[in-house]
Image 1: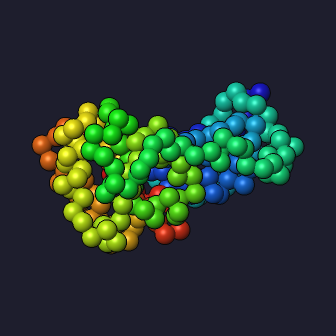
Image 2: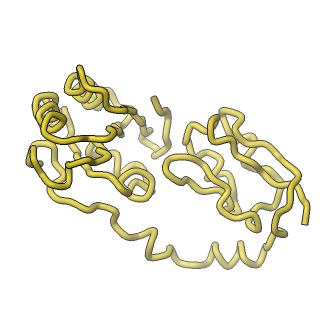
Length: 207
């Protein structure tokens, strides 16, 4: 059937998650840090998500879509969290920057996630949205009291790192993490991005 349904512009989406929180039917979820319409039959077309979006990434379209299935929505709300969503995506050990061997086999050709220690506690879907498919290093510049840039530069020299994503908290002490990564990356052409998480567990920015 042709009906009104939401559409999410992936280019405009900043990954804040506000629309997913506003969608009471569970039609919208976060996939790899971006909002996605997960199921047409969960979208009632009323648009509670529209005013929640700060970037204007969500609009209504008229297209062929499955009919809204209220029974399925209610059943999903009452269902337990699926095992896949609970499973750990971590595939290596150790994870502390200070403890990780420079020549660890899991670093070879890796997409590297460098995260503030607190980030996984603040962001509920951290494993699914950030860890999945990545080698992981964590640290806290304030608590460790070391210059990570030296160790990270050694890692970048010794391994063919494909990309680096830094996930930090909004607090000032986390600023030392992207700073150390930037210093370690000097002179290297490795794709690099920074995601900032709020204390409330929302994505504030991606740069």
